[in-house]
Amino acid sequence: MILLLRRCTIIDTPTPRSAAGTSTSFSATTSSSGGDVTGRWFGNLNHLPSGSSQSGIHIPLQLAGVVFLGVGLWAWSEKGVLSDLTKVTRMHGIDPVVLVLMVGVVMFTLGFAGCVGALRENICLLNFFCSAIVLIFFLELAVAVLAFLFQDWVRDRFREFFESNIRSYRDDIDLQNLIDSLQKANQCCGAYGPEDWDLNVYFNCSGASYSREKCGVPFSCCVPDPAQKVVNTQCGYDVRTQLKSKWDESIFTKGCIQALEGWLPRNIYIVAGVFIAISLLQIFGIFLARTLISDIEAVKAGHHF
Image 1: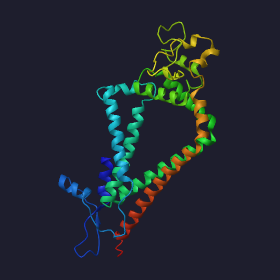
Image 2: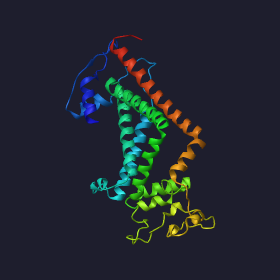
Image 3: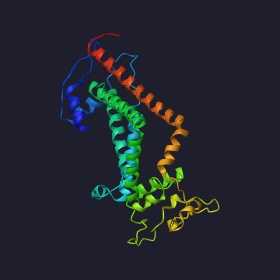
């Protein structure tokens, strides 16, 4: 981000128009003084036409990025990752906090570029903001199309992803909570069934395992008992030592991949609505950025309004 600011400062730094207000000059200037930098980046020059809009989605985008970053850093602090960053590389499954931090960094960077670019009427930052939103939009579109065309490939990749995280179920509390939430919400167990929990050393049924959870499943696989007001976290113990025909009496036997495949057609309108809403917001942000860039370029060219 610092390199981006530095580059955009050198390329396109505006200077205030003259007292007569007839022209605006843009010069390539740099300064090492703190006050000069503050004025150059956060001063509000009002030399755009009165009809120009400097508002957009960049401010809520930046605020959302700050929230995601704050939540991610807090979660890592609670897990002790900030004091020992090597814990990240020792994770075999995915750490949900990494996703939160990645989303936060992207949203904060785009929001910052859009906000500062609009306030300082900096074409370089506005072009960066606009180009990044366009890139994200087409990536989303490409992912959606490819996922529809190559459903078997996506299913296999999701199975591998789910199984790798089953192996790391007890390694990270956030990952554990994520899998439990997924299984409870979709009333499923494992990728394709309860047998997938043999992949985890704690739930494995092999004779070499001495875990108390041997031949069991997590409590999130258990069929909830309406009479129980307290969650029984040991309900899955030894359940797979019973006859397979009796499993459905106490645990979910449907795999989560089948559950998700059944969930999508039932909620296709909700998914489509969310995708359309996000796309419209992105298109609106692109439109505002391009409009502001056009106005700035018109002022640079000496057009009068």
